[in-house]
Image (tube, rainbow, N blue to C red; front, top):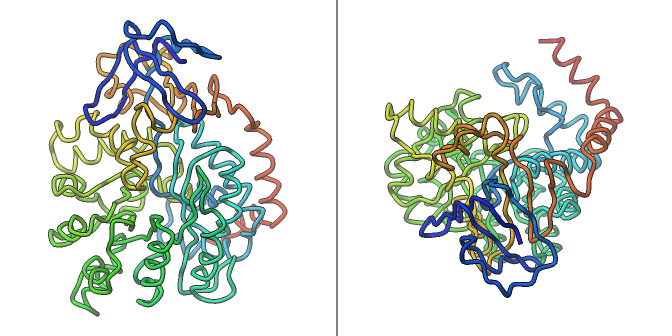
Length: 440
């Protein structure tokens, strides 16, 4: 039992209990409510006094690349950094061990920031899934498919074959799902996109793709097909409720209609989108049309941080400015995008995303004793505008506490960092990165 918490359930009625309790058993929530309604006959093995901390569902990062921690802060302000830095270093240095140690470090960062579930898209996803399983996280791990030879497959679009062997290995796992992620419509053939969709349907898992993100992408489909990328994807028959379309920065009114028609989900990455000067997606229009939207950080090289507190604040500031409307997106709506909204994007809304009896016990406590957390007139505003990842005190995933008192329970952060640094050094990543910077 956790008592004396300011509980934001994020359920359909958006109930909150300013002085509440939650009871869990094994992996699930058993009861939640106000302290004055706490049953007197409840027996429990452990009791934690929240001391007024805000308790809310674990946050859901709908789009990231956890194997890319080594690239963080590399060439951030250079144009075309993908081809100048990331792709060459990835091809020269990325290997199973580097991806695995990066994944553990990234998951640690997310857990410490209250992210309990994520949707990843990268290479060596078997190793990344093993890292997520070991660290008791919840996630969907999707192997990238692209029209070039990559670090883990010897032929263009070989990620599809990788995924065909990868998906069945994780069927039935309670926290980890395997999936497939074509990089983008323009970097795969029609046949590969259709096969990825079929693979997702066969195993009944969400799949992911970058869509309507790049200026050249929009121009390509306009010139070659007189269509938008989303119209093209409809024509080839791959729009469905299982597709998570990452970014969706450049959308027409018809695109939004199609996303709603096929119940395609959108992973909105405001930090990465604006850092790369690509634009601000039409999220208000998407939500008004009934399209499901969640928040994502993108990878640690694109958005630099993997926490959703930074995304929530960037979301508020950019969208209010873009719309020239201070009242746009009240804080309550933004917290919804980071929790139950993300759960809906991943098709996990029956398991996670809100604090309700019968759901998985994925929740976090945000302390309210730090100087930036007083006073609190509105807990949602406090989370969006005042709080940061450093205010996350405790984190539970499937009933297991993975963060206690702002520290990982089963892992040492310094050791995880040392292991990642050693893997970077062994493959020459640091030396090559520094040389690449010198050439610019």
